[in-house]
Image (cartoon, rainbow, N blue to C red; front, side, top):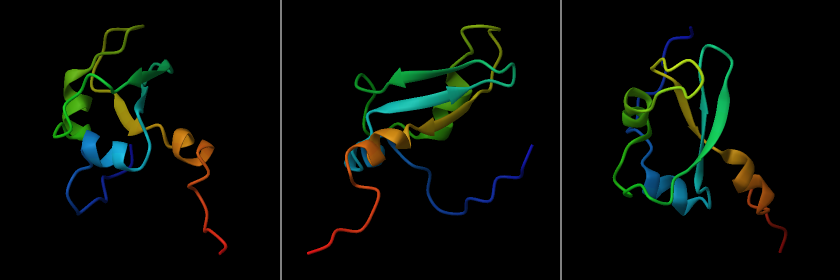
Length: 84
């Protein structure tokens, strides 16, 4: 597994929502993946905390990989530069 190279603060659910992303992509080492709706989560929850709390629904293992579902961001047309 690659080393964690992030040095800044962890992304929160609130920060993720501010980018127009409302779901989380979760992936397990067993190959199972799913999209999780983040509507019920508090804005202050940090994504790395979810990695330790969530469990794979297929094999029941943890930790799992947790990322914002950035496809939502691009689907809204926010992925590129605007031409004025």
